[in-house]
Length: 201
Image (spheres, rainbow, N blue to C red):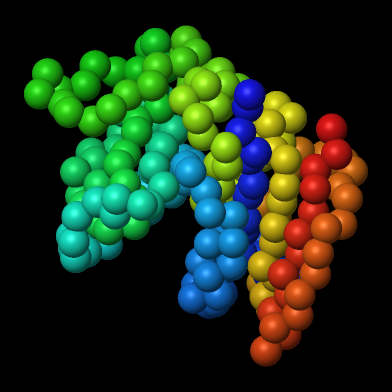
């Protein structure tokens, strides 16, 4: 059975995911509510944090933490061992495609290969479900979330809306009209609002 897939994004009032100070403590505190088995991210998200990953403390894998699965069709991510040792995840998994460039012969990172030129997200989720994964939380600034929405693979969407207008940049969503069912709303100090929706497919 395919896992339950939820995405949470921090956005401005005009739907932009950058250009403002995100309430990271609240964002990740709320994220723990799902108790995900797998954290799913795209390579761009990891590459944007590569410097911090290299410099970060490395307490070692967290035995009871989720698995970090990175969609990396072009094999651009290099800091796999650093990611494993950050203390957030139990292990790392590279999601590759058949045409992903060859990896170093001494690579030890676990791999899941689906699709031809790009990772087949539906098949990857099916395989994870077959392995006992029940909940996947997507950590993305929008590109991976949009891909999952386009494929009808997202079950739940949560937005942590910050009280700021950016005025530049593209809103995170470009999938077109999509019906949603309201699940919950919470208002926090400072005007930050948490919106949760079930995705109707």
